[in-house]
Length: 237
Image (cartoon, rainbow, N blue to C red):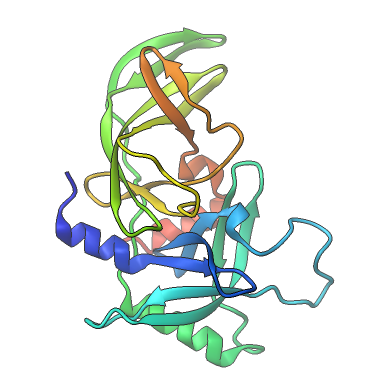
């Protein structure tokens, strides 16, 4: 299980991404380095053809205040990167020269909110499976948890195993239904370390992996550009 102190940290670090009508369209989570990770499709932007040189794209976020009142706080942020294939994106503060007040508010939120650390350890191996190109390890099942947009937690079992020719795919079997609106929510282990982000990627279908039924989840490290991964991990205490 995941303890209540860890839950509180993750809940405080989880934000809503708002649409043009100021309704939540997805979620994101604050990580070290002053970044918010989310699913790419949660952003109010197309990957091509929408912006001209010199334009700014601004996302509106809704976060909890960093006091005991847990009031709602409105923030502005800009995309730092979008990976449409794996449906992962990162948000950062706006340009300080053009949006000084908004950038200052975002920095204040980051300074007063504990970020969720990324999982950066090895997985425990239980065996090997032969695929084209050699033997690939199969890892032991472990517990994962997701904080949904409805404000409750769902537990699941995760297993890292090969699929087709992809040696490192995380499969998660959830103990409850994850409904629309939870996209961008954090998936963590029992230590509160971020392992993945909820997505609706077309690859996320139920598969039987050696008797383990689960949804495909993209691991963060292979999906994030190296500069983003290094920005996060170098700020991880």
